[in-house]
Amino acid sequence: MKSIEKVFMMMLLFTCFFSSAQASSDSQTSSPAKKTEIRYYYFPNLEAYFDLQEKVYLYKEDGEWVEAEELPKNYGGYSLYNKVRVSIEDYDGDEPYLLLAEHKKKYPYNAKGRFQNQKAQTASTE
Image (cartoon, rainbow, N blue to C red; front, side):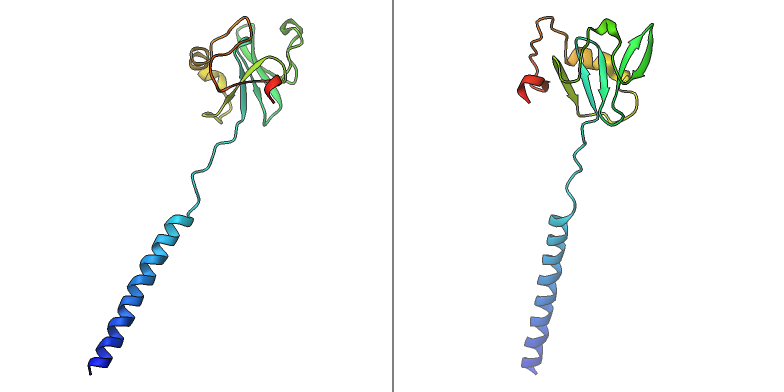
């Protein structure tokens, strides 16, 4: 009778061990937090954005926000790969300009083209 009890106890221990191992494995293999892809670049000296998904610039013209494939001539031929741009990593909606006040404060314009914040990128560093 004692041998049956030993077998039963061994089966019980194995069952407990494998069920806890499976639970541990499930928690380790669950998908990691999804990293947000960058959708917008912000240009501090223009107070404008470029939407990487739609391939359009967003800028203010006569007090209204406009979407266009190119910047207007008065922007001096500014290009996506020219000067300072900041990757906006915390917003993926359709109206990044709603955060313009926050972005102006976080990434101030510098007439010399230098940028203090490490999130800024320039074409020369890519």
